Image (tube, rainbow, N blue to C red):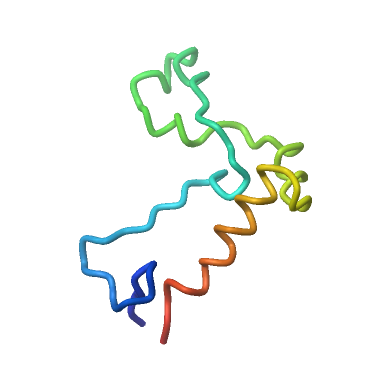
Length: 84
């Protein structure tokens, strides 16, 4: 399996990366509440690992919402980056 470049003009190099964090497909924003938890406040990885916003996740099904537009755009690229 190899990675195709996002523009379809060839293969991506080893240093080209597409990182999609949990929540990116539904336009989730950063969650700074981890600063309030003494066990998490020193680990900025929690910025992208907040609680799931299920109302926002539901809105991904409506193509008129920002969540739906981003979900559809990112989902449509899922199969374009990989090929056998």
